[in-house]
Each structure stands twice: as structure tokens, then as C-alpha cells.
Image (cartoon, rainbow, N blue to C red; front, side, top):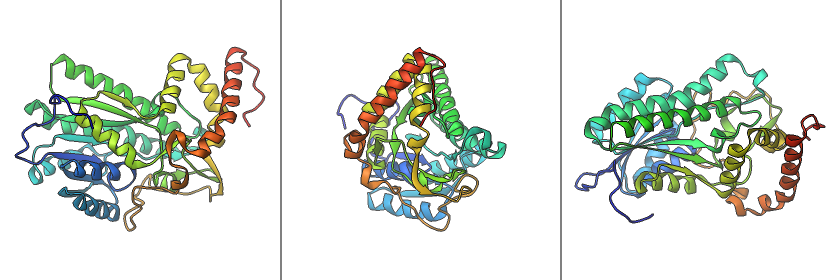
Length: 346
């Protein structure tokens, strides 16, 4: 972590332990991020729905040197988040960092998603960030200090098939964060809002997201481990960064999306449908954690089932795939320049 001048928004007085709040903290990136903050000397409030996952995450935070405060919360409810924020300040003290990480989604073509499922995914993934930001600002603005980190995605720039609710939510999160940041700048506030855009990560999301497909889903390579992502999130909070895009491949995809939406759409259409599906069959009706917590009675930890290939850009399996990816990109470019030339997306 870089050493530099004091970061606006973070308390420099270390006589009182600093406090971080992490939503979606019972598993995956949130779990790893909570532990990472504890390793940096923070006490950590853990917000999530699943009691078994929360209890296990609290023990990890404690082993890492932090004081945990697990709170069962559904981030889709502002009232629950607001009560939790106030409880954290009573139990642990003033909140220095608030990380909005919670998400939920469904893997399905848009035409096959029920309105209830789409609405729920938006409520957790988008409104969860909105309500978390609102609760944090109500406490931070009067003190004129604090940092909010919203977890974004490369899919906030490029939409892909089978993930319309998640992409919609992350696009909305990006616009929301930019609007709020502009307001903070307008009032010359020392409260800071940062967005960290994630690549594909090896988390339990792909085991417990609602799945309407006949095959099990997977992250689109290259895949990273949640602990690496957690270090980038804590680094953004402590180093004063405003926006972080993790991974060279992610940065390239974001650049393509900014350069040409048509090219990005064609590339996603060609590469990302089968690229998100394994060869393993599913029941085609897996409910997952969209409406109820998957880790209420069992702990899933931070990792998913892709440890063998979660080594980022230099993972051998991803490097072997690059010639195929290059052909897909070339085809996408051709179809962008010559509309009507498509012949399927196999």
C-alpha cells in the first residue's frame, strides 16, 4: 500500500480504532474485504442476510485482529441499513469507511426472467448501494469525514447476455456514484466516494445465484481470487483513489465499450453466452440466494469452485484461450463494420 499524505475522509487520529462497514460480508468479495480491513487495523461491521456466513466471517475478522460486529441486514431495505448504521456507531464508534458490496442476480435470458426476480436483483444490487450510501452520508457529512467505496464492475460499461439485471444495476450504480460525487464536490465536502470496478472473481455467487439455464454458470475469464480484489478495495479506501478498474483485460474491455458500443455488443454476443456456462448440467430452476439467504445455515466462505483457474490474466487456461478470443474479436469487428453479416454466435 502506498505511503503518502493524509487521505481526505479518513481519520488520522489513531487513538481510537478506525471502523469499516462492509455489506455482503458473509461470503465472496465482501468476506475477503472485511478480513482485509481487519488486517489494516480496523474494527469491522459485517452486514449480510445469512447468519451462518456472518458468524464465520466474524470469526475470521477476529483472527485478523479486528473487532467484528455482525448484523443481519437486507440491504434492499433502507430502514434496515439505517438502523444498522446507527447501531455500528453505538457499538464500534464513528464509521470511517463504508463499502457497498452486496449483490444478487439471476442467470437467464431477459425474456425468461420474472418481474419479481428482476426487481429483486435491482433492489439488492443497485438500491443496496443507494441506501448504503445514504445511511453513510447521514453520519459522515456532519463530521465532514469518511470514505464510501461502491463496488462496481466491468459490466457497468459493457452489457453481456444472460445477466441483464446485474448489468442494469451496475450501469445504474455508476451513474448514481458520479452524481453523488459531483454533489460532494459542489459542497466542498471532505467525504469521499470511490468506485472499484471488478473483473470476474471466484466467489460462491456462481454456486448460489438463481439459475434458469440448463448448465451451471461461471465467471468469464480471466478470473481473480477475492483476496486480491479485497486488497484493491482497501487500497482504494486508504490511498485516496476515486475510481479503480481492476485488471488489464477489464481496462481493455472498458476501453472498447467507450470506443464503440456496437463493437462491445457484438463481442459480448459472440463470446459471452457460452463463455459464462460450464459443461456441468443444472436443474434449470435453481433458486439460489435471490430471495432468501443461501448461507443461513451453512457457511460458504470467500471462494467459489474455480480455484484452479483463478490466477488472473496470466492463468494458463486463459492464455490458451487468447487465440480464440482474438478470432471472436475480429469477427465482432467485422460484424460491426458490416451490419447484417452475422451467421450465428457459436
